[in-house]
Image (cartoon, rainbow, N blue to C red; front, side, top):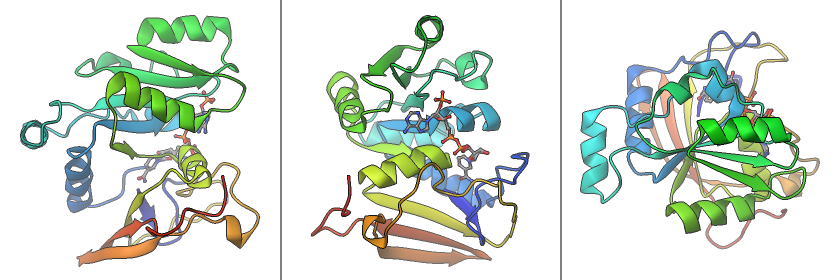
Length: 226
Ligand SMILES: NC(=O)c1ccc[n+]([C@@H]2O[C@H](COP(=O)([O-])OP(=O)(O)OC[C@H]3O[C@@H](n4cnc5c(N)ncnc54)[C@H](OP(=O)(O)O)[C@@H]3O)[C@@H](O)[C@H]2O)c1
Protein backbone atom coordinates (compact mmCIF):
# COMPACT_ATOMS: atom_id res chain seq x y z
CA UNK A 1 0.00 0.00 0.00
CA UNK A 2 1.14 3.52 -0.79
CA UNK A 3 0.06 5.93 1.93
CA UNK A 4 0.45 9.61 2.65
CA UNK A 5 2.19 10.88 5.78
CA UNK A 6 -1.29 11.06 7.34
CA UNK A 7 -2.06 7.43 6.50
CA UNK A 8 -4.43 8.03 3.59
CA UNK A 9 -4.59 5.85 0.49
CA UNK A 10 -6.80 8.19 -1.56
CA UNK A 11 -8.31 11.66 -1.26
CA UNK A 12 -11.73 12.09 0.34
CA UNK A 13 -13.37 12.42 -3.08
CA UNK A 14 -11.34 9.37 -4.15
CA UNK A 15 -10.31 11.22 -7.29
CA UNK A 16 -6.62 10.73 -6.44
CA UNK A 17 -5.52 7.19 -5.65
CA UNK A 18 -2.15 6.89 -7.36
CA UNK A 19 0.50 9.14 -5.88
CA UNK A 20 3.64 7.08 -5.38
CA UNK A 21 6.79 7.56 -7.47
CA UNK A 22 7.86 5.46 -10.45
CA UNK A 23 10.01 3.57 -7.94
CA UNK A 24 6.91 2.73 -5.93
CA UNK A 25 5.21 1.42 -9.07
CA UNK A 26 8.25 -0.73 -9.91
CA UNK A 27 8.29 -2.14 -6.36
CA UNK A 28 4.62 -3.04 -6.68
CA UNK A 29 5.20 -4.90 -9.91
CA UNK A 30 8.25 -6.68 -8.46
CA UNK A 31 6.10 -7.79 -5.51
CA UNK A 32 3.31 -8.95 -7.82
CA UNK A 33 5.91 -10.99 -9.68
CA UNK A 34 6.32 -13.17 -6.58
CA UNK A 35 2.63 -13.93 -6.07
CA UNK A 36 0.34 -16.67 -7.27
CA UNK A 37 -2.59 -14.27 -7.04
CA UNK A 38 -3.47 -10.61 -6.46
CA UNK A 39 -6.51 -9.69 -4.38
CA UNK A 40 -8.47 -6.41 -4.30
CA UNK A 41 -11.77 -5.18 -2.90
CA UNK A 42 -14.67 -4.30 -5.20
CA UNK A 43 -14.33 -0.51 -4.71
CA UNK A 44 -10.62 -0.54 -5.51
CA UNK A 45 -11.27 -2.46 -8.71
CA UNK A 46 -14.04 -0.05 -9.74
CA UNK A 47 -12.51 3.24 -8.64
CA UNK A 48 -8.93 2.73 -9.82
CA UNK A 49 -9.69 0.84 -13.04
CA UNK A 50 -7.20 -1.75 -11.78
CA UNK A 51 -6.62 -4.69 -14.10
CA UNK A 52 -4.14 -6.36 -11.72
CA UNK A 53 -1.75 -7.26 -14.52
CA UNK A 54 1.84 -8.45 -14.28
CA UNK A 55 3.35 -5.05 -15.10
CA UNK A 56 4.75 -6.05 -18.49
CA UNK A 57 7.03 -8.57 -20.15
CA UNK A 58 9.99 -8.06 -17.82
CA UNK A 59 7.91 -9.03 -14.80
CA UNK A 60 6.15 -11.79 -16.71
CA UNK A 61 9.57 -13.32 -17.49
CA UNK A 62 10.60 -13.01 -13.84
CA UNK A 63 7.44 -14.88 -12.87
CA UNK A 64 8.17 -17.69 -15.33
CA UNK A 65 11.75 -17.99 -14.03
CA UNK A 66 10.26 -18.49 -10.56
CA UNK A 67 7.99 -21.24 -11.82
CA UNK A 68 4.86 -19.05 -11.67
CA UNK A 69 2.33 -18.46 -14.44
CA UNK A 70 3.13 -15.49 -16.65
CA UNK A 71 0.18 -13.57 -15.18
CA UNK A 72 -1.11 -13.79 -11.61
CA UNK A 73 -4.60 -14.99 -10.87
CA UNK A 74 -6.87 -12.09 -9.99
CA UNK A 75 -9.19 -12.24 -7.02
CA UNK A 76 -11.93 -9.68 -6.36
CA UNK A 77 -13.72 -9.54 -2.99
CA UNK A 78 -17.34 -8.45 -3.21
CA UNK A 79 -19.37 -9.70 -0.25
CA UNK A 80 -22.72 -8.51 -1.57
CA UNK A 81 -21.73 -8.99 -5.19
CA UNK A 82 -21.99 -5.30 -6.11
CA UNK A 83 -18.83 -5.20 -8.23
CA UNK A 84 -19.83 -3.31 -11.34
CA UNK A 85 -20.17 -5.28 -14.60
CA UNK A 86 -18.67 -2.20 -16.27
CA UNK A 87 -15.43 -2.33 -14.29
CA UNK A 88 -12.34 -2.19 -16.48
CA UNK A 89 -10.99 -5.51 -15.20
CA UNK A 90 -13.65 -7.50 -17.07
CA UNK A 91 -12.26 -6.22 -20.37
CA UNK A 92 -8.80 -7.76 -19.74
CA UNK A 93 -8.84 -11.54 -19.91
CA UNK A 94 -5.12 -12.38 -19.66
CA UNK A 95 -5.62 -14.52 -16.53
CA UNK A 96 -8.56 -15.97 -14.60
CA UNK A 97 -10.64 -13.56 -12.51
CA UNK A 98 -12.09 -15.12 -9.37
CA UNK A 99 -14.72 -13.52 -7.13
CA UNK A 100 -15.13 -14.14 -3.40
CA UNK A 101 -18.64 -13.33 -2.28
CA UNK A 102 -21.20 -14.34 0.37
CA UNK A 103 -24.82 -15.37 0.72
CA UNK A 104 -25.63 -11.65 0.96
CA UNK A 105 -25.32 -11.49 -2.82
CA UNK A 106 -28.74 -11.85 -4.45
CA UNK A 107 -29.46 -14.60 -6.97
CA UNK A 108 -29.44 -12.01 -9.79
CA UNK A 109 -26.06 -10.66 -8.73
CA UNK A 110 -24.61 -14.17 -8.44
CA UNK A 111 -25.88 -15.03 -11.91
CA UNK A 112 -24.29 -11.85 -13.24
CA UNK A 113 -20.98 -12.59 -11.54
CA UNK A 114 -20.94 -16.12 -12.91
CA UNK A 115 -21.18 -14.81 -16.46
CA UNK A 116 -18.34 -12.35 -15.89
CA UNK A 117 -15.89 -14.21 -13.68
CA UNK A 118 -13.92 -17.40 -14.27
CA UNK A 119 -14.81 -18.62 -10.80
CA UNK A 120 -17.16 -17.49 -8.03
CA UNK A 121 -16.83 -18.72 -4.46
CA UNK A 122 -19.83 -18.10 -2.21
CA UNK A 123 -19.09 -18.04 1.48
CA UNK A 124 -21.77 -19.49 3.71
CA UNK A 125 -23.41 -16.78 5.82
CA UNK A 126 -23.36 -13.01 5.56
CA UNK A 127 -19.70 -12.43 6.32
CA UNK A 128 -16.84 -13.79 4.33
CA UNK A 129 -15.20 -16.82 5.92
CA UNK A 130 -11.58 -16.03 5.11
CA UNK A 131 -10.23 -19.37 6.32
CA UNK A 132 -12.56 -21.17 3.92
CA UNK A 133 -11.93 -18.68 1.10
CA UNK A 134 -8.16 -18.96 1.35
CA UNK A 135 -8.43 -22.76 1.60
CA UNK A 136 -10.52 -22.75 -1.60
CA UNK A 137 -7.97 -20.57 -3.39
CA UNK A 138 -5.18 -22.89 -2.33
CA UNK A 139 -7.00 -26.14 -3.04
CA UNK A 140 -8.69 -25.26 -6.32
CA UNK A 141 -6.27 -22.69 -7.73
CA UNK A 142 -2.90 -23.48 -6.13
CA UNK A 143 -2.64 -20.09 -4.41
CA UNK A 144 0.10 -20.20 -1.79
CA UNK A 145 1.27 -16.60 -1.91
CA UNK A 146 -1.40 -13.94 -2.16
CA UNK A 147 -0.68 -10.22 -2.46
CA UNK A 148 -3.54 -8.02 -1.27
CA UNK A 149 -3.52 -4.54 -2.75
CA UNK A 150 -6.37 -3.04 -0.76
CA UNK A 151 -8.45 -1.16 -0.33
CA UNK A 152 -8.89 -0.30 3.27
CA UNK A 153 -11.93 -2.46 3.91
CA UNK A 154 -10.36 -5.67 2.67
CA UNK A 155 -7.15 -4.83 4.48
CA UNK A 156 -9.00 -4.37 7.76
CA UNK A 157 -10.67 -7.77 7.46
CA UNK A 158 -7.34 -9.43 6.76
CA UNK A 159 -5.59 -7.64 9.63
CA UNK A 160 -8.39 -8.45 12.09
CA UNK A 161 -8.37 -12.08 11.01
CA UNK A 162 -4.62 -12.38 11.52
CA UNK A 163 -4.08 -13.33 7.87
CA UNK A 164 -1.34 -10.83 7.05
CA UNK A 165 2.19 -12.24 7.22
CA UNK A 166 3.89 -9.23 5.70
CA UNK A 167 2.96 -5.59 5.27
CA UNK A 168 4.66 -3.46 2.65
CA UNK A 169 4.11 0.26 2.93
CA UNK A 170 5.33 3.14 0.86
CA UNK A 171 5.29 6.30 2.93
CA UNK A 172 4.82 9.25 0.57
CA UNK A 173 5.64 12.87 1.43
CA UNK A 174 2.07 14.17 1.10
CA UNK A 175 -0.81 14.97 3.43
CA UNK A 176 -4.37 14.57 2.08
CA UNK A 177 -6.43 15.07 5.23
CA UNK A 178 -10.19 14.60 5.00
CA UNK A 179 -12.15 12.51 7.47
CA UNK A 180 -13.67 10.53 4.64
CA UNK A 181 -10.39 9.83 2.90
CA UNK A 182 -9.71 6.09 3.16
CA UNK A 183 -6.76 4.86 5.18
CA UNK A 184 -4.82 1.63 4.82
CA UNK A 185 -7.28 -0.16 7.10
CA UNK A 186 -10.90 1.02 7.23
CA UNK A 187 -13.80 -1.31 7.89
CA UNK A 188 -14.57 -2.20 11.49
CA UNK A 189 -11.16 -1.94 13.17
CA UNK A 190 -10.36 -3.07 16.71
CA UNK A 191 -11.36 -1.66 20.11
CA UNK A 192 -8.43 -2.72 22.28
CA UNK A 193 -4.71 -2.52 21.80
CA UNK A 194 -4.48 -6.23 22.54
CA UNK A 195 -6.56 -6.81 19.41
CA UNK A 196 -4.30 -4.78 17.14
CA UNK A 197 -2.41 -6.57 14.40
CA UNK A 198 1.26 -6.38 15.41
CA UNK A 199 4.28 -6.42 13.20
CA UNK A 200 8.03 -6.14 13.45
CA UNK A 201 9.91 -3.77 11.20
CA UNK A 202 12.11 -6.00 9.06
CA UNK A 203 13.41 -3.57 6.49
CA UNK A 204 13.30 -0.02 5.29
CA UNK A 205 14.83 2.00 2.53
CA UNK A 206 14.70 5.68 1.74
CA UNK A 207 14.66 6.65 -1.92
CA UNK A 208 14.28 10.37 -2.46
CA UNK A 209 11.48 11.55 -0.19
CA UNK A 210 9.76 8.17 0.07
CA UNK A 211 10.26 5.40 2.61
CA UNK A 212 9.73 1.79 1.65
CA UNK A 213 8.87 -0.21 4.76
CA UNK A 214 8.60 -3.96 5.27
CA UNK A 215 6.84 -5.27 8.36
CA UNK A 216 6.43 -8.94 9.22
CA UNK A 217 4.28 -10.72 11.70
CA UNK A 218 6.38 -11.84 14.68
CA UNK A 219 7.29 -15.50 14.24
CA UNK A 220 6.59 -16.62 17.77
CA UNK A 221 3.02 -15.46 18.15
CA UNK A 222 -0.11 -14.75 16.21
CA UNK A 223 -2.10 -11.56 16.70
CA UNK A 224 -4.20 -11.85 19.86
CA UNK A 225 -7.56 -11.98 18.13
CA UNK A 226 -9.51 -13.86 15.48
N1 LIG B 1 -2.83 4.00 -2.27
C1 LIG B 1 -2.98 2.72 -2.46
O1 LIG B 1 -1.99 1.96 -2.41
C2 LIG B 1 -4.34 2.15 -2.72
C3 LIG B 1 -4.46 0.80 -2.99
C4 LIG B 1 -5.74 0.27 -3.18
C5 LIG B 1 -6.87 1.08 -3.08
N2 LIG B 1 -6.72 2.40 -2.83
C6 LIG B 1 -7.94 3.24 -2.69
O2 LIG B 1 -8.77 2.68 -1.68
C7 LIG B 1 -10.13 3.03 -1.96
C8 LIG B 1 -10.99 1.79 -1.85
O3 LIG B 1 -10.92 1.28 -0.55
P1 LIG B 1 -12.24 0.85 0.23
O4 LIG B 1 -11.83 0.48 1.61
O5 LIG B 1 -13.25 1.90 0.06
O6 LIG B 1 -12.78 -0.37 -0.58
P2 LIG B 1 -12.25 -1.84 -0.94
O7 LIG B 1 -11.69 -2.53 0.27
O8 LIG B 1 -11.41 -1.79 -2.15
O9 LIG B 1 -13.63 -2.51 -1.39
C9 LIG B 1 -14.71 -2.54 -0.50
C10 LIG B 1 -15.71 -3.54 -1.02
O10 LIG B 1 -15.07 -4.82 -1.15
C11 LIG B 1 -15.90 -5.84 -0.58
N3 LIG B 1 -15.28 -6.28 0.67
C12 LIG B 1 -14.21 -5.74 1.30
N4 LIG B 1 -13.91 -6.47 2.39
C13 LIG B 1 -14.80 -7.47 2.44
C14 LIG B 1 -15.02 -8.56 3.34
N5 LIG B 1 -14.23 -8.77 4.41
N6 LIG B 1 -16.03 -9.41 3.09
C15 LIG B 1 -16.83 -9.22 2.01
N7 LIG B 1 -16.68 -8.21 1.12
C16 LIG B 1 -15.67 -7.35 1.34
C17 LIG B 1 -17.25 -5.19 -0.37
O11 LIG B 1 -17.93 -5.30 -1.61
P3 LIG B 1 -19.55 -5.35 -1.73
O12 LIG B 1 -19.98 -3.91 -1.59
O13 LIG B 1 -19.85 -5.93 -3.05
O14 LIG B 1 -20.02 -6.18 -0.59
C18 LIG B 1 -16.87 -3.76 -0.06
O15 LIG B 1 -17.91 -2.83 -0.31
C19 LIG B 1 -10.17 3.61 -3.35
O16 LIG B 1 -10.32 5.01 -3.25
C20 LIG B 1 -8.80 3.27 -3.91
O17 LIG B 1 -8.39 4.25 -4.81
C21 LIG B 1 -5.50 2.96 -2.66
